[in-house]
Image (cartoon, rainbow, N blue to C red; front, side):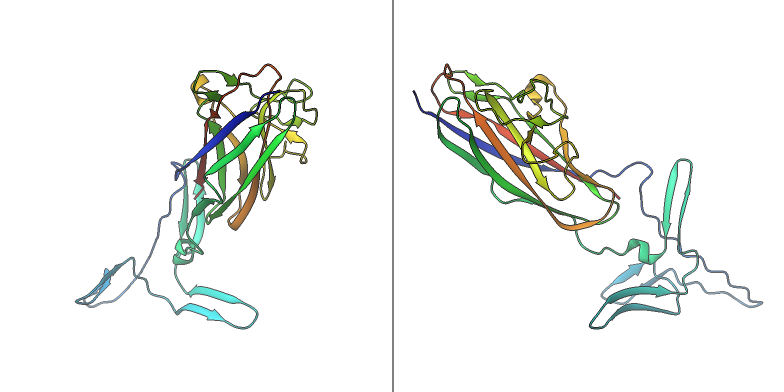
Length: 256
């Protein structure tokens, strides 16, 4: 039997998607009724700064105790969520308050399976961590090509034990003579077809015009949400020797 060295390079792409109807609008409404001259405040400024969107309220700030943290704005007019066909308006400074910043990271950017044995599983993994305020997020993934050697040989994508798993539908893969390359995801907010650690999918192949597949998604804000990407590979006994590589691209998209 021959050894087949492989390498897997991961490239991360982050995007921020803002839906046409999903935007923040701060509304400050001030009704003043006087018989004399009216002066309206348009901004708060000094020689060193200018704050636009200033507002009048009874009290605001950050409060805390041993059991809670609270930020508030009391007395602001029209602080509410408004919606109609074609738009959403989140009015009020608390709607603009950011609990934390959007972030996305991978625990490692290179995966190396080492030397492979035909008809035998080799596995590797790393973790993905995402923090997203607002109304949740999604993470999708794709491969730039199948695992390919410098001589042009390829390792096919897995079709799992049933022969029917797809880029968006995982199925059990536990028989190593069913050769191929695939992945499983476990952890927070993962796609529901990853029922347990035996369920795998092939990566979409962008060189074949296949669309990225969602691997994590939620409609809620979340901090330090973690998922493990589990890669699995089994070459056939007729697989040509060589070093096989591809790039896996992850796209993290927050929703506001």
